[in-house]
Length: 79
Image (cartoon, rainbow, N blue to C red; front, side, top):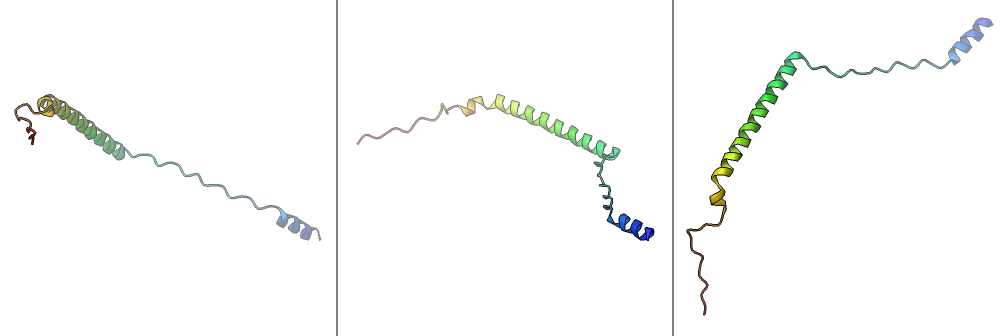
């Protein structure tokens, strides 16, 4: 009888909750770090070149961005 009671009590205990699996963030491999670093260097160089081109273009175009001086304005006809 006691074994039946023990079995009954054991069956009535709440089941243990399974441990939650916490996924670790994937660490970057050395190859990935090198790849990202080289990509960042290329982007930095491209930004530098783009800013130099913008500066050079700004120095060359201030005259052309103003109103043209050589062309006469069309005259209005009085009727």
